Length: 234
Image (tube, rainbow, N blue to C red):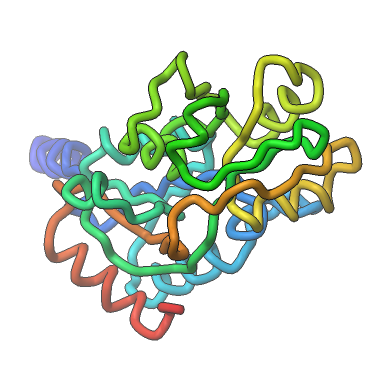
């Protein structure tokens, strides 16, 4: 009897989370979409959709809120993992299973007004030094459009550091790329954040943010997730 108990315990212990219906969900603290409020609770419209969908699908999950680059690398590494809010780009299309659209956003090149930078195209921005958040939409978008790391592109860990460099080390940087909600929220929450001017919109259309999963996640789980997200799409 004891040996049988041990055998069952070992069998369960080595079953992956995905087989048990439990997944890992990666995200970042992204003001305006999903973020920690003043009480330390993780909230926001995108998180609310994810939370409701997972509850509706009856799927257990472990939420890991990390800097974006770590969250992105985490979902690429873990077979039973998903991530939000992930911008859907052509270069990312074959790398994920796209489950549900959560919201949309528009991103811009921003500059300090006193620099008086004028741009009429993305190519013109190659004459300046632009900072982006590592592995996010703008990083991949500009790399795809020929921006070279070290030459025209500086990769930073998070939004706070972007603003810090723009404020304290003006000579190192000309432009940053942020979505409009990020910029407005940062200015509202941080009185020291510098006022910036919109210089150029990144792309013609608004970009969609998604809940997406690792390619190795089982189709049964993907089907459950999609069913859970029904009626949540914007």
